[in-house]
Amino acid sequence: MARRLVREKLEEWGLDDMVDPAELIVSELVSNALKTGGLTFMQVAIRRPARGYVRVFVRDGSRELPVLMEAGVDEECHRGLALVHHLTGGRWGAMLDPRGKSVHADLPVP
Ligand SMILES: Nc1ncnc2c1ncn2[C@@H]1O[C@H](COP(=O)(O)OP(=O)(O)OP(=O)(O)O)[C@@H](O)[C@H]1O
Ligand SMILES: [Mg+2]
Image 1 (cartoon, rainbow, N blue to C red):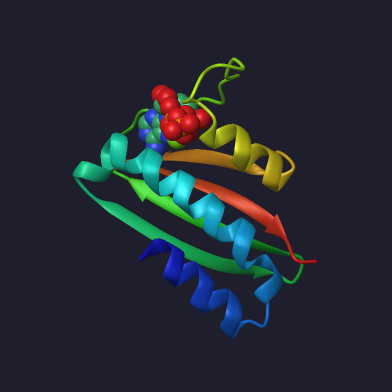
Image 2: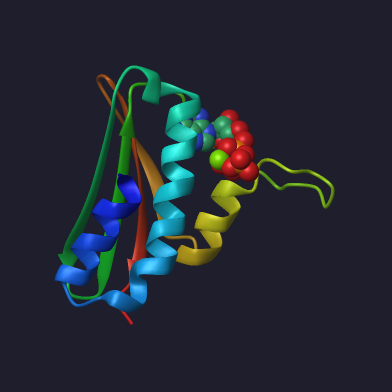
């Protein structure tokens, strides 16, 4: 559902070239939310706050914050945020709110 939301909005905005990286990002953020606060609630959103970039948000019901980890070569986990970090050029972050937090990632419009 999150991937579809992101794809449909980007296509509506004429930003088809951004669909692949945006789907990857939202998949990683939703997977993370499911492991923690997504069990209580989750919200997924995509916005275009300015012409130059698109912001993907995933909000969940845990006040634990995401941590960028450096996965070892043989490790199979801890790669999701590293991928988000790479795709956004480091433009991602998290904000606490009373019920949990929201993690966002910004993708530049090509
Ligand atoms: N939404 C979240 N809520 C709480 N903690 C988070 C959240 N997202 C990430 N984290 C923390 O940050 C760590 C790193 O996240 P990351 O996505 O890089 O790795 P992972 O989810 O453990 O493994 P992978 O994404 O490779 O399956 C997680 O192990 C978790 O401790
Ligand atoms: Mg992950």
